[in-house]
Length: 269
Image (cartoon, one colour):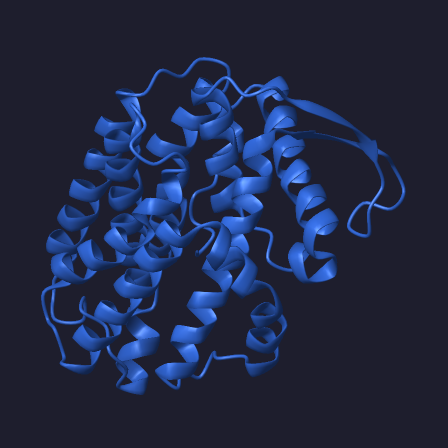
């Protein structure tokens, strides 16, 4: 995904910041164990959020320790993992692969053939392990690509298609009691991410003549679309039974996801 689902650390307590960092390092730890450097190169804040969310929601057992790593070689740091750290690590690799594959198909200037080759070594096993999530993502990205080629101008529709594509990533247990809410949360956050990415790329895409469904929309319409997606996400989020990581997760949902938008708006003033 895009790295927009991050906390606003200035609004968190010191202990919550340390907890977030420990989950982030825990995801990195699992990516390294499962996929080596190929995994840690794809570490993201988005899947850290998913780990925090699912671990809390399903009251998963956690464990951890202290270690040094390439990023922090001088001092040991704490890491926390649960069964959902492994799930999030697998989802990260799947998302990275299909995102890169989509770039290759669309001949995107940011496409990286070496990265695709590296990720392709893992995708068959991941697809086999998570056929529901893989099918949803592949079908959704294919629909999104076709809509782009057809010049679809409805930004809300494009965001919805992307949201649907990633929705199953948020739903680890098929037909679970929480599945409908998690699917709605994933779709809404996915829609928000799509709109945020398009918003931040407006100037670059306009200069290059590249596709961007927000180019013909004014600022108020764009903000309204993003606000609707964020509101839908928060409504689903508040319907989940969360407690241990609630302060961190709320910080991300209500503040963190808007950081890039606020920075861009301030830079434009």
